Image 1: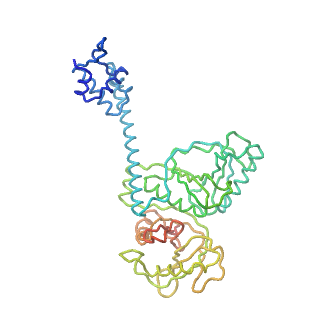
Image 2: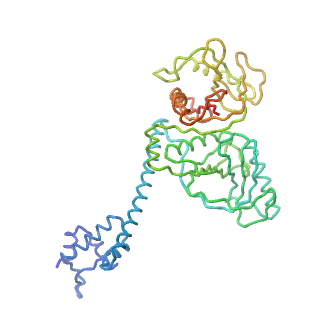
Image 3: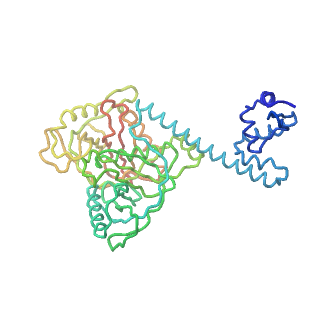
Length: 443
């Protein structure tokens, strides 16, 4: 027989592990000296120890291993335990593959932007909550605050005080993203059920098994950029939308703080695409846009007449004729009155050298005293496919839309201007890699 140290060296298992297995009754020594307490093992015991180590290598717990070592274990039970472990490992592999895909997507984003991403996205479950809610159609974000005030007033009249640890939220029920005229429910979590009325509904907001979460800080008039980042992350990591999105106002309408300091959590229910679908999309380089409906808006800016040689930064060209128009526009931006929105590159015609067909401009609330050399244009309400891209990929994005996406997706081009949208995501210090969105009118 071998002393425990000798057996440990032969089996390449620590003495501590052998003692622990003995305490559990999983692998006892052949004999223990009753006077000295020395433990002795035999070579024949190596077979049992090796089986324990082999099952441990497969990831079985020590409790499961003890069961698997029983001589009277039926073959059917042995197969059941093995299949169960196989299923657990397959789930772990899928989870690690998804993690690997997220790392790869983040690496690509860092390589493209040369810095950490502006937003981080987490996947998490959301528990069901009892809420009181008011569902209505809103004209814009400002209406959310009014609905919150109305809802809080109703609850206070029934003795329900605001809970700072349970912030109010909004659920957007439209299948498409709408800048205005959205179908929204504003809700307040409740600890106990109260009586509702024709305006206020008390119900359970369902759980979200898997939700993509992004925290946005800032005024709500610039939240669209955060939504684009969330959508791009979802596409890059093999997810698709799975229901109405939510906004949780962690610090917002009720805080009394500066709107620039608002903190809003965006929650988008998502479903994991199959591995085959993700691989297929990566191989085909498919770019899936958002489908949105936008109300009418007006732009004032500098028109462009003429032809262009190439898209910006394409084929080694750092700038082009339209780029010079943008330089002049930026220099004269302060001349435009009543600016109320982001910058637009509005394309409303075919390139020609006789009349304007492109405007580098900004959205205005009303047209008043148009600066010399500038013009205005009102774009009617329209449905668009929205493609995120960079200025360096602008030409490639337009070619993809016209040559691949439109025919595959089954849409046709609507008789309306297409445009580039430059909002808070646009980085003027790095124009080649600056983020923008192409809005392609569809019907």
